[in-house]
Image (cartoon, rainbow, N blue to C red; front, side):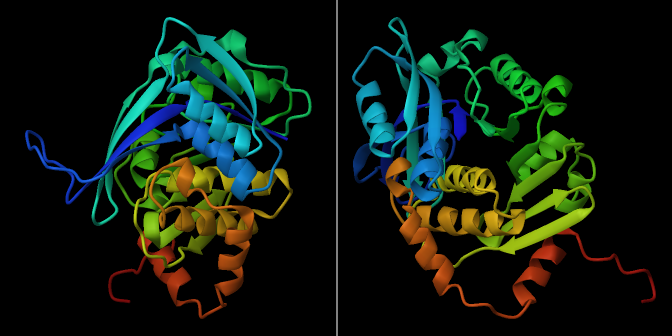
Length: 317
C-alpha cells in the first residue's frame, strides 16, 4: 500500500499558440479546468495507471475548487485523508499550453501550505511514502523522517526545484528529478553522469523528457529510452511517471521494469489535455508496452552518450 502526501490543485488551462514571453500578452483559445496538483496527480497515477492500493494525505479549502479534486481521487480509487482549512482557498494552478505541447505553470498553493507535521496518518501497512515539494519543506522533511524510522521507503519527487536540506537528503531512499532539478540538488552544471556522482542517495532516477530516463543505484546504471507518441500536452507526464514507478516498486517489480512502465505511462499522459484527465489506465499502459517491439541497442547507447555514461575518450584515441 502506498501513501502519497502532497498537493492538490484545481488547474485552469488555456491553449495558446506559444507561451507568452515576459511582458507579452497572447490570445488563448479554449479555457478548461481540471483537477491537478503534483500530489493528487501522482496518487491517481499510482492507482489508475499503476494498479496499486493508494491513499493520499491532502489539504483543501472549504470552497467549490475542492469538489472536482475529491471526485477525481475518489473515482480513481484513492482513499483520502482530508485536512479541511476553512480560512484557506484550495490550491490552484494557471497553465498555458502551447501548440507544440510545452507549458508554463503558475501555482497558488492555498491550503497546500497549511499541511502540518501533525497531519501525517499512522503508517502501518504502507510500503512507500511518495512526496513532492508543493507543500512546506519542513513538513516534507518531517514526514520523510517519520517514515524512515518506521521502515517505510521514502520516495521524493524534488519538484518544483529547490535546494534540499541535508536532514531530508539523509532519509530519502529514492529521488526522482528531471535534469534541471538534478543539477540543483547536485549543485553542479555538468552532464547527468557527473551530477549523479555528487548526490548521495541510494537510488536517483532522472527523467529526460522524450529521450527517456536513467537511474543510478550504487554503481549500477540503467537507461530506458522513451516511447514515441504524438504529444498534445506534457502537463502531469512527470507525475504519471512518478506514480507508476512507485506502484511498480510496491508490487516488487525490478527497477528496470518499473522504469519502462513509468516511461510508457508518462508518454501516454502527453497525448491528452489536462493533468489527471491525461493519466492513462493500466490497460493502456500494457497495450503500449506490448506494441514496443524490441529493437537494437542504438537508442540506449545514444541515451548513455547523452547522459555521459560512456567512457571518455583520451586524446589520441
